[in-house]
Every structure is written in structure tokens, then in C-alpha cells.
Length: 189
Ligand SMILES: [Zn+2]
Image (tube, rainbow, N blue to C red; front, side, top):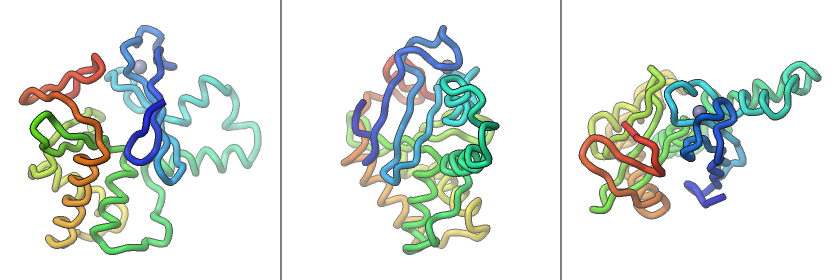
């Protein structure tokens, strides 16, 4: 267990969905809000998350009770589509919250450059410098998905600045080569 973006992260020695994944690719993270997400960086484990992990360790949990079914929805929502609590904060702050709830990983490299890593809509994990156009588009898209409206340039700059600060001061330091990074024996692209 290790501190992770203000929450906690557990790296699983063996992937719960494919026992051949033993290179520390599978993880469970708990966000500062208490929400839990899980996943594995292998392509064949795309779409696996906390509900699917519960399927492995707690078979039948989805059907056991109506409460369980409600929890299923709530848990899935915490990973992706849950509305913010009351939509509080400035647009920039909400942009940060939506990006974080999308399961991003924030870190910095050996030169102090801030990076964001996220799963794109095709299910592939991407890593971009926070100052890049791609990172801005991801933040804009995260915001639009929740509020169906655009983020102003000022709010985008605020959100990007906050995420960059988190990447520098809370995120891990990782040695990066130009396009591909090797972290914990997992290739990130
Ligand atoms: Zn896996």
C-alpha cells in the first residue's frame, strides 16, 4: 500500500483477472473521497474495474440484494459517471475533480515536467505532458462529459495548473524516455 494522489494505492502481485499478469500491473486505488477503483494495465484487462474485481472475490454480489444492485451502480459511477457532489467549486475546480474521477495518474519526470496519464475512449492508456494540447483536450472532454458545456480558457488554465501542481508535489517521480515510459515493469504509452 502506498500513498497515491492524496488517497491510497495497492499494487496486486497477481492480476485478479489473468494470473499470467504478474508484473505488478494490477492495482486497487482509493481516492481521497473514499471511492475505490481497480484495474490492470494490460490491454487484455481493459474494462476491468472494481465491480469486476468484486465478481472475482465475491461472486454473486451483484444479485444478492437490491442494496447490492444499488451499490453496483454507485460503485461503477464512482469510477466514471457520477455527478459531482452538488457541482460545487469554480469551473476550474470542477474540471480538476472530473479529471481525477476519470482515473488519471499524475506524476512528474526526472526534469520536473508534469504528466497526466489516462485511459482514452478506445481503452488505451495515454501519457501526456500537462502542458500539451492532448492534456488540455482531455480536461475539456472530462468537463464536457459531466456538464455538457465547454470549459472557458481561464478555467482550463486553472484546472491544468492545479493538476500540474498535484503531479509535481503529490505525484510520483518517474524516469521517462520520449514516447514510452517503463514504470514498475509496465510499459505506458
Ligand atoms: Zn491483468
